[in-house]
Amino acid sequence: MSTIDYSDKIPNNVNLAEDRTLKRALEQWQPNYLKWWGDMGPDGSQDFEVYLRTAVSVDPQGWAQFGYVKMPEYRWGIFLNPGEKDRKIHFGDHKGEAAWQDVPGEHRANLRRIIVTQGDTEPASVEQQRHLGLTCPSQYDLRNLFQVNVEEGRHLWAMVYLLHKYFGRDGREEGEALLQRRSGDHDHPRILRAFNEETPDWLAFFMFTYFTDRDGKFQLCALAESSFDPLARTTKFMLTEEAHHMFVGESGVSRVINRTCQAMNELKTDDVATLRSAGVIDLPTIQRYLNFHFSVTIDLFGADESSNAATFYSSGLKGRFEEGKRADDHLLKGQTYKVLSLQGGQFVEREVPMLNALNEVLRDDYIKDSVGGVERWNKVVEKAGIAFRLKVPHKAFHRNIGALAGAKVSPDGRVVSDAEWNANVEMWLPSGADRAFVASLMGRVVEPGRFANWIAPPTIGINRQPVDFEYVRFN
Ligand SMILES: [Fe+2]
Ligand SMILES: [Fe+2]
Picture 1 (cartoon, rainbow, N blue to C red):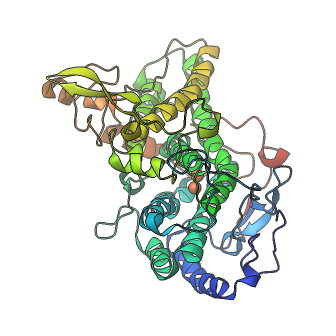
Picture 2: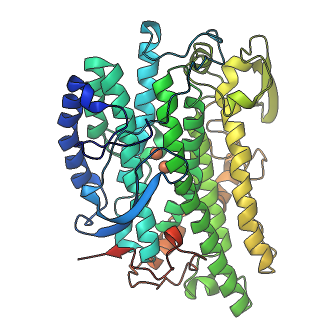
């Protein structure tokens, strides 16, 4: 089970060779995927040899191998974690029954929708990031970008495998549609809003991989609990890859902050104009980027009250974060959860049925998790002896989904008038001038061991290689 067949055209550990129909269907999808990668994958990178990790096993010890690969030749494949013997459903109305090895008819439409929605985010982020290679701050960062990109491509494979294997003809059609939608496209956009936003610069990329890939982690964790066993097993392996994406974000932002603090101490100033002319990104701008990415990402969890969320849970399709570690009855009937809304300009907490509030439960778990990294960023500022502190904004700030959608609330959680919002919005969210300034810093640095002025080098390289290792050969 844990060995991957690399002699196959499509590397896999699912015995693809024995399922001729499925193998044929996926082999027909493969060239379309490669065409998509050629059109929408990293701009101008086709000939680069990149020091990438490739999954070679699903054994937690040594699952990956590092080596130079031209990205269009990356071995995208299908890797599921080993099945758990006699796995039982552990939440919802089917609790205690055997986990499903096939899709029950009555849950087919919902499961397909869940898989398609997850699958759609994977190519979307590759599309969002496709121009970033042209302005990389170093080879090390360029390689990390490409690593994230090829793995998001593999995550698409993971979802398309499920669609092809378990959903017949409509699954194959969804597989095609996943290659046809485009991030930000007016007529054929990606499904979720945050995946139609641009990722125009590297600060946005680091914020995206910290905040939005972490949304991915929470969605995948919830799906890793699923009663549909193949979905649980494939998402568990995706989580192994996902950890690196969040590392890229957390360490990336941390290095930007580090460099800014260094310049603040050298120049003995916190004056924004002075710091900008020294070519570093001032902390208030970093805070505004944080506010933007955090607020857009928490919208991804959906409406705070949702009958779909209740159905997905009760029917066993999607669990909570760390469902197995929770000490309640895993049915949640008759229980309630506090949901925040606004009434007459005041925040009120309403008790709503827990089952209907499961999007909010997942969002709150996410918020707790994302605060941790922000605290680690603050340690960098603190260590530099600077008084500034970064903060995640209030949950009601800049929301577009659910009961708080459209509310005018400051990052520190005050309900404000339209006039106050308009007067301050450029202090709270990145302005056109902020984005133009950050864009002005984005030049391409590709000599091994050199880094753009606005970001500090990492402390260690990838796979214990030196920081000045040749991570990309440009040919
Ligand atoms: Fe992903
Ligand atoms: Fe990711």
